[in-house]
Image (cartoon, rainbow, N blue to C red; front, side):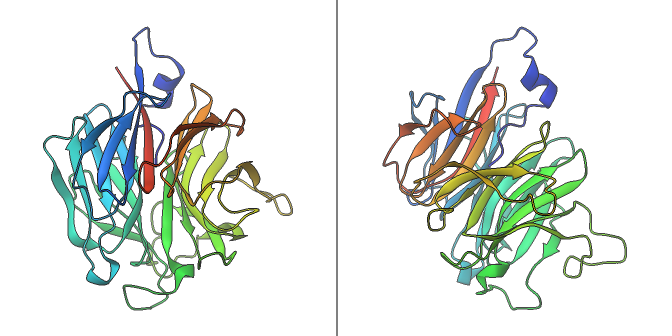
Length: 312
């Protein structure tokens, strides 16, 4: 769940303008979009009836838009992506039901005008224009299996993008508590003469993970952050590792432990902090190194995606 759509230069210096930090997060079980200040105060319900099962969220501050994914019912192929104003008004469907099976984490790439997402039972990494046009499959992990797929090693879940180097990163979580989760990287564009199903540029950065879920990038320091909902000691955690791991040096650093099915993550570089959620309904903050962990809100439903933004 991306940290912010504000360009890096604006994160570093606000140009004298006062901005207000705000978190937007999803209650998957209650079908709600909520907002809250970074200290957990001033909770507001922005959208009700979101769903079924809203999962990924991004915020476009400049356009005053919230985008989110609805997982739907995988067997019905009724996943969708919606958009609303920051106040929840003018709700509209961007990707109609059936345009994707089970959309999960969502990433907004503002400069290219693209939305990226992972389609879990669809076993795909996908993207589209901000208005929902030009739906594309970038990665097809199905291996020819029929959709909806039941092989969880092929389920794509978390997604993030490095536009500077033209790369996409995604997770395939693997079966529950099986330590078969993986994190992948590939070029944004499918290599010439190849297809999403037979790409030769896919790298496995990390494997044998419990159940990696959502991803975020610190592009300046070349660090990858992610949540994991698998079994302890490496599961139910927030982790980080180099985006460019060297052979023999690819052991992720565990930053936070004892989550109850960790899901969403958002980074605030200017504030040197991160925010993360779990399915027990908890919203947390911590420094980027995992220290000073704080429970901001508890028992809020089944929390999924989260986004942090600064609003003028």
